[in-house]
Image (cartoon, rainbow, N blue to C red; front, side, top):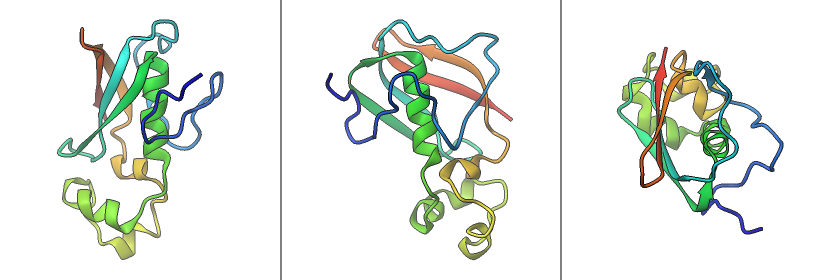
Length: 132
């Protein structure tokens, strides 16, 4: 089977993402049946100024798309990444202070991890509303 991710590693089927995870507040499990998601956009900074879009080579399920976002946010936090989003974080601390506290990209979201709504457009674009 061809890898549906362009540049992102794939979460193996049947496995969950390790590291950063959204708190699922949808009152349901993520849908893992319909392969209708072509891309996902999610916020990478606390107050939603910066976002990331992952485009898949072939359609994936809602669950797979969310796991891809979680996997992206689970990657180690680097100085370059932090400096890019620093002004849109809760703390706005220097890299020297943050590197002692945060280890992953998702840590920069602080409490903005509550997945409250998912929408998938007719074109297969998944967006999420995240609360804190």
